[in-house]
Length: 147
Ligand SMILES: CC(C)(COP(=O)(O)OP(=O)(O)OC[C@H]1O[C@@H](n2cnc3c(N)ncnc32)[C@H](O)[C@@H]1OP(=O)(O)O)[C@@H](O)C(=O)NCCC(=O)NCCS
Image 1 (spheres, rainbow, N blue to C red):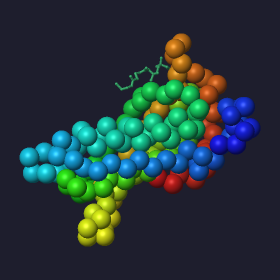
Image 2 (cartoon, rainbow, N blue to C red):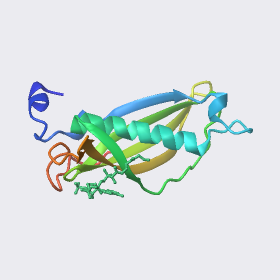
Image 3 (cartoon, rainbow, N blue to C red):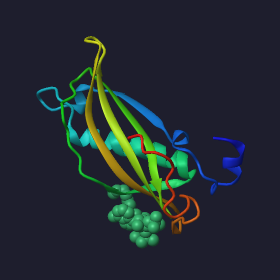
């Protein structure tokens, strides 16, 4: 983030300013009895990865307002590395659409697979509720969606 962005939260920000990456190793406590990553755990990580991008864009506290349809295309297993990449795709008044794309890396086999993608809406808030001035201008596109 530039100094100007810190001084004025309303100036437009490019997608790259919100791009975030979160990495997790699947441990036994994250898995079902067959050693496959629990869907709920992955949803939790998707929520956190999305929040990273929303925080970076809005420079404010955010809450998750909604998560759209979510598919799990391929399982991740204990020992796999899960990579979650997120960015803000579009901003409205207090709300932001964030894309999260999830990859699983098996570093022993040196292969990477696309596990899941999700779109979430985060709303910038403070103690008084949704914080209109922080998410951006109505209908602004941050740039071409990357996720
Ligand atoms: C999200 C929340 C702050 C919205 O509060 P609200 O009083 O409905 O606020 P408003 O009606 O002014 O809406 C504020 C913005 O949120 C958006 N919004 C509200 N509900 C939404 C939903 N279900 N999905 C997507 N966007 C939503 C509105 O479109 C609006 O966007 P805009 O400012 O960009 O136009 C409020 O419902 C809330 O706090 N929900 C709980 C969040 C939470 O706890 N999340 C964790 C999961 S348990």
